[in-house]
Length: 258
Image (cartoon, rainbow, N blue to C red; front, side, top):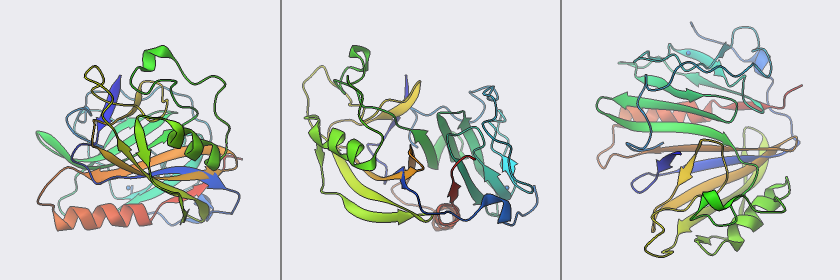
């Protein structure tokens, strides 16, 4: 199971919840054709995604696809058209350009700034439907019965797991959708537990080593929870790339699938 290690990341994660209206993606202007450590494979390690489209992209908006190799995303607007919700963002015209697609499937999408031989910045989105009965041992299976679909259900489930220390939830709004922000800290869980997994996620999810912290914003888009993560792993950051990352995050638009 591929996982994001967050031992040296500054992380924001979003898990989406409200019925407010996001700006329709079809109205967004487009330019010309627009986390993690070594646990995340660099560009080219994954073949192009084969999932069926869940909805066609709006005019002027390009579907995000894992292109393979070291292909760089052209500046412009991209949409996660295979994801449970339509989520669009803008890639700016950087100099030099350097944003790549790491993964793009129905349950996970990863975009990263790749400076060989390492990824230094990235953001990602996951769906999050349940938690594991034992976050130290995903093989033991998911929690039964599964958690409910609301923001509060996931907050309560994560807060009840003894492998995490969780802060009190704070109200937040992202792309017009309200939710809750919490920070998880992975606790020591024995010598045989090198990392804990906060939520389920097919083949790609998040792994936290003891002492790691993970900040998440939990939101809901018409009953669909999603997770967004962004961060860096560099001690001395690149101000230009950091500004581009913030610009991308600020450009995010979300709407339910019709």
